[in-house]
Image (cartoon, rainbow, N blue to C red):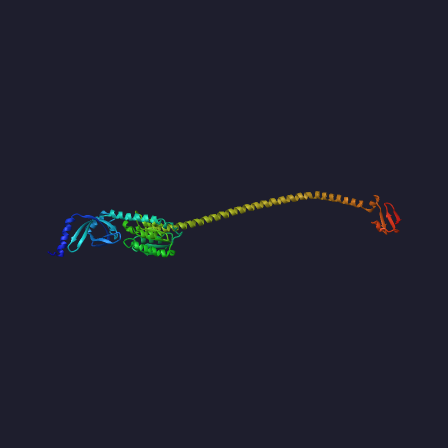
Length: 407
């Protein structure tokens, strides 16, 4: 039996592949790793089962010249698609080298497939959050009247972080803000895990903050992929503090934007919102002070008018009362002589009546009417049994007296 060398075997494989793969073909695979050297991109491609187990693996390359051509055809460029974990539809030309083995030469990439897969995943995430009642949960938390203590989640190298700081701390109204920064990747394979970790740290210190702010600079739609992740969006929706986002995309809305309390397009817009929020409160306070001052002035003015009215009424009433009293006094003075005469006349009549009565009751008048007075020893005798037989009595008549003896 003939024995072949390894080179002969590999050369035979190369010829078979060259014969059978004369035209490029389209495949679907997930990016496991991406590298770059001198403009060339080197990719590790994998295919996984639903359990996560890798069932196929290959190395691929995009040469610098073809990278430039593919990149020029895409409005957002090719780099956003070359992220670990994304599924790509690629046109490849299989090549086999006697020494380096199988390598897939990528000649084209279909971005529609990747975007379609991401959109499908995004829709599933939204549906799950809707079913769990989380899309509106964070929005139901009321913003504080004044916002000062801010937990900021961002990358140290995020393009929009400096803009956020400058607009917030350099505001024209002299408002001060206490910002504490929690560093996390805002794109790439580590973004979801680090963002969740930052939210968990803030939740443990909820009493130290008024709100949570997530900011990042602008970028391609695929750069926002982490902000569509279910676990991250669920965590943000369940935060005990209002979450504000400014993740730097003017066209597309991430799922994070949907679950956030307030979604703004850019970090600068978030800073402006916070300043305007406090400005609105200050305006409300100033308006309330002005209203209170006006009400106080109106009350004082009304009280002064009422006091003036009462003073005028009191003066008029006193004058009227005095005049009435003087009139009543004059009427009394006019009536005194007549009343005096009437009173004297009535008492004179009573006096005459009493005098006549006294005269009628005088003993002499009584005797003239036929009555008599019997005396014993000079004292009027009232009872017959007071006179004893043999005693001398004297009876006085109207004219004269009669002496008699008791039998």
